[in-house]
Length: 565
Image (cartoon, rainbow, N blue to C red; front, side, top):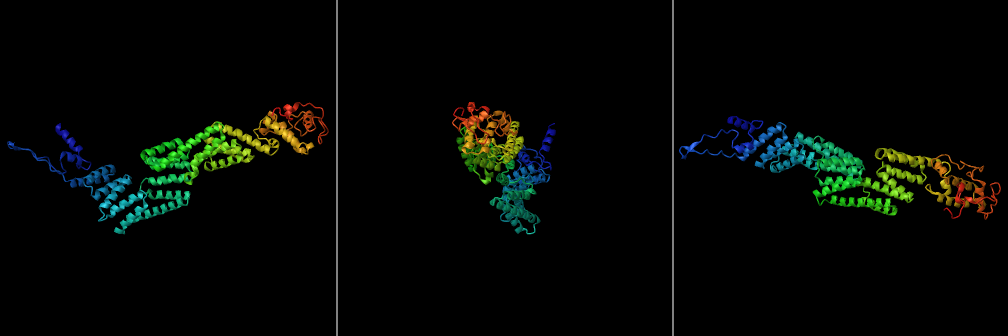
């Protein structure tokens, strides 16, 4: 049984090619061609017996060479990770042997680990500086190309061709590197002239140039991709590029910082702070991360203060806070003009300006917001409301329709319903604008109350009274407008776009006078004649002796006086 166990242990110590594992060999003291130790002989102290002599230590150079040969076997079998381990053991024994380094580099390259492969090739090339090897330099050039360092790769491949001018592999590599060099120059030129579309095309070409080398896109290029998408204002693409870069290199403070910038510009301020904090844990002195952290905190605070001021009715304070936040965000082209966070704050400020009836300023902010984020249904809604106030009804209807479409994608059902209700009112306003605008006739806003209507009616009726040199037709329109707007039910129908010409519900034959009674008119005319109900030129005779009850606004009229204003 003991012999059987011993046989199994010997088989376990053998490598697939039959060679003895050097680590096991060292531990057991056996060599590749050694035999069992000779039988013990008696020592002088024990008669004829004597102690067995220890096996001689194997030369490190010999062991290293055996490890290299075993590594070659694994490499040819496609077991590149195990080959790397064996070459590493050989290098530990003979660190100044270039062949071991270049063999390990080849294994790394097969594993697409070009960074450690590059380091091995560089060290091997330095060891061969007195007698440069074209094979080593060619492998170095391939690593440089795979990592996107085209200038260094071109210098290396030229060194290869100086040694072997007809080296076919070197000529092919030179052509690839020169092609990449051209794309890199195009990229730099496009970035300098801020032609982001061409810069992106050049970067795509750079990536295609190294695809044949089987490498991952260099980290620097991935960061270029993020920057270009930000410049183009393509937030979804910038987020995808940042996520990809971070997935491949999660411990890079540079990538964490630029990912934080993408989140900040996308309006995701808490997540931006988390990424910046991670970058600073890895590199406490990272300048970009430190600046971004301060900036994000400032904007977050000012935005919240502005929102609180708006909700509490402190509209001027809200505008001030939003303006400060916008100044901290800026409008840098490299950041997409300020990103979605700027678009949000512009929209907030526009809404505040609208409540202050500063329609032109609000429209400027809303247009700027939509230039950055053209699909924001909230900004579209705000602009539609502004256009209603500016009596641009066609534009308002177009904005409401687009807002409804976008709200269906990113808003709630309640948002869609509310927008449809506002659209209906805008369509009614358009219809009214093509007939008679009673609000405009009285000179009152559409959200006026009963007191506003009474005051306006008194003012306009006195202004246009024919006996005072006014225009009779305008006076008729004033009376008609008041008749409709002072009646809540008729005003509601009018606001919804139903036909209202001041005649509905008339109780007399006063054509064009809003259904007013002779008593109503007599009370109005009496104001111009000291209460005597004198004659009224142009209306077919006088209206004397009628009651003064319309002081309180009965019949949709308001006759004047301080009461009820």
